[in-house]
Amino acid sequence: MKRNFLTILDLTHSEAHAMVRRAREMKNTNYRSDVLKGKTYILIFEKASTRTKVSFEVGLSHLGAHYVFMTSKDSQLGRSEPLKDTARVLSRYADGLIVRTFGQEKLEELSNYSSIPIINALSDDYHPCQVMSDILTIYERTPDFKDLNIAWVGDGNNMAHSWINAAIYFPFQLNIAVPKGYEPSGGILERALQMGAKIYVTHDPKEAVQGVHYINTDVWASMGQEQEQERRAKAFKDFIVDEELLQSADEDVKVLHCLPAHRGEEISEGVMEGEWSVVWDQAENRLHMQKAILEWVAS
Ligand code: CP
Ligand code: NVA
Image 1 (cartoon, rainbow, N blue to C red):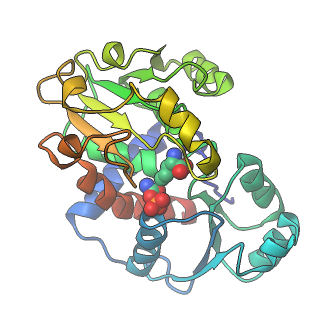
Image 2: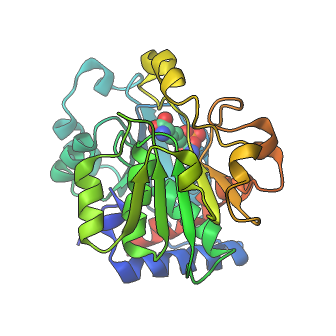
Image 3: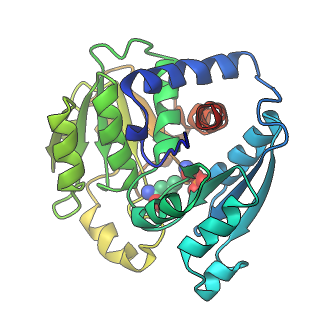
């Protein structure tokens, strides 16, 4: 059966936990294999990327696969060839698509028309590869997730949505602090609460980080929202993760940022470069987690 990874909820609870353990094992053993030998994956990126593009390409090499990278600009997608046609054509050539795009519905359309697996490499709605890598970063430090409090400070965006999904499967308390008007999707939140996630939403960053073990943040304007930058900078001015905010957190608090970071906006230079920051491990873990995702998709 074809396996997609469009959101974390494409995994079962036990698959999500097994994937984190597997990625850790792959990291510890500097895993290389021929499991995808003879297979070709196509990366379709409609938005910029450093980490996701390179870590997928390197991960595919580690597993023995070939890859082809394309953007909408240098393909017929940029000249309005329908996704449903692209999906059927590429399915005849390759063994999987890794797609960074805008609306989640584009991934769903690709999936409906392709006979090969689709991996979400970031959409406007979710960034599941990143958040599974972040879960690995936490698992390395706090393997049982027990009595763990995590805060999200910033925009109720694609990253926040994937964290909400992660809170369904991993037993931490998630406090989300967003400015008024920038809340995460009500539907995504409601579903998570119904599925047992422990999530609290506030407009007060200080309240959200009270005693927490991890603080997560992300850019105030995501890709595709560049024209809102100025308006957002005003709305988010009290949502900077700086040394002062960390005073309210646990004394051993660690700070996560998916990167790229805008120092002086959502995160201070001092926090980014200080003892709290685990962002480089987080970035490295993209490689290990995505190898585990590729293995799962192909199994
Ligand atoms: N965090 C992340 O997805 O980075 P890139 O945009 O560089 O891929
Ligand atoms: N929320 C950000 C994440 C970048 C990795 C964006 O979508 O641009």
